[in-house]
Image (cartoon, rainbow, N blue to C red; front, top):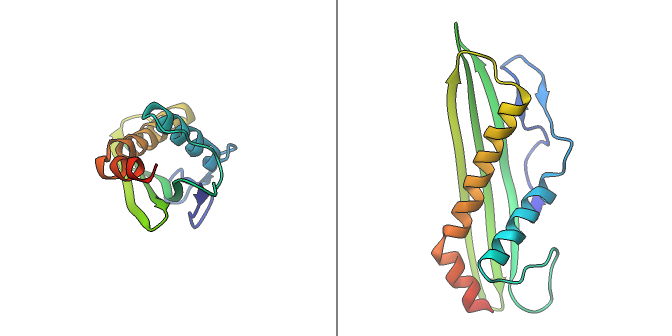
Length: 143
């Protein structure tokens, strides 16, 4: 799991507001979720590269949240992009998984609400990965 995002910031509170940053390491969060997903699908996943068997490289390409203000509302847009590369011998499979959310509210979203929205987008992205029958078929063939 590698973080390929151009910045470690998650976004801005508004077009002129301060940056949003996480204390936690996103690669650890994603890796844990992916290892759990692999186990749920019957695969034995380990963190780090292995010398035999299939290797899955996950590149976090983007996770960004932007808040905008209107006359009476606050808007939030979240976009996420993750590339998965599965390699074993001469076989490989690559796929980009994207997720996003956009909504407007009358009140300003607090940290807890933004966290929940970010989590929902990340969960959607991970679910898309584990719903990808082509990826799962590739992993089975690589075993």
